[in-house]
Length: 143
Image (cartoon, rainbow, N blue to C red; front, side, top):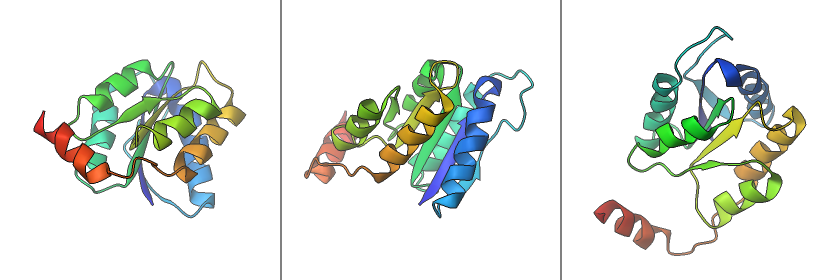
């Protein structure tokens, strides 16, 4: 899979750790920044990652911040994005199984690094179990 990444300064460390994990799992990464821990406003970085997923340039996306809340809000403003803020293994599993989340948001200040990496793995490996995805997408697009 090709995975888009985006973060602000408060999620930079986790973005770098997840980038390493994704590479070790054989995924391709498109990093939309930021590229250090200097304070920045997150919306631009997050929107670029979300738009890449929405256009189909990337299969999925992961965004990071202090809490992950603002990042999920920005990503979800992009048509076609279903970004889930996840805080434990079960939230990651359900985001894929039930919601077909194509983006994941993580809060570096709220969850331990080891847990964040497990969440990413679960989210990547869990299939959507909806069965009627095309009809649901058509309904959502019609709204």
